[in-house]
Image (tube, rainbow, N blue to C red; front, side, top):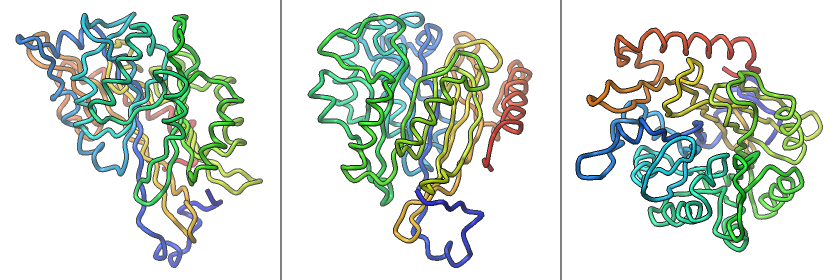
Length: 350
């Protein structure tokens, strides 16, 4: 991507651009036990239709949307932490709410064992949902990657990796995309060789509940930038971390790094884990090259239900009037802490 930002483009350049492309990212879509119980229906089905109703318009407004599915679709019996297994209805609702791609490489992807990992792949395939991160076998991985999508005229490659699987062994033939610098560099090269104009790496990394990136995150980010990655999108800490846009002097590329998007939906209790951020990455074609225009973050809050009366609901910051009176204090604390973090540490983010 060229060394251009929206502030550096002339009015003539803006007028000459093709249509812009917007890709939206959210963090960890979890499924704790209380979430399962809130969604359970008397007939044995699960209903998640209320969970994302308030944020669906934001998701669907993007040209492409990505979320981290932090629970296998392992089949019944369904369970929450520490070994997750969510019903297919959960992923189906994420799809209905506008997500195009689910990431499955995370520390909980093996919670239901190899059979659960295999079932997740097959279930997502059956519902026509895009997914990367875990595979039936090495041949399955080689067929699926590079995962390149034409998004509004831009050929974007998506890759994803996790630091580990909570000590649960990954038994052959199942394959999980684990963080390996050499593998990442090779995958990025393969994506570019196959025509990718933009390379996005979504990475499950960092230290839980820490609101600043670790040295390892920063080091790995530099490795990925040097390899030619254009978008680095992080998750796992369950809290938001800073975002930045910088321009590589040698290559002239604009690179966006989002260290952690926090939780998308969960039952976690810590104030800073009660929500997360949506990062909308805006790109365009200029002089027949993709240009990073910027990253637009927005915050949202996960409102927990009153027992037996409603479900978990993701509430965008601008819809604060939808927050119940009993949740307003924690809503305000989450928003204040996240805003202060972004104001202090974000770099070149509007």
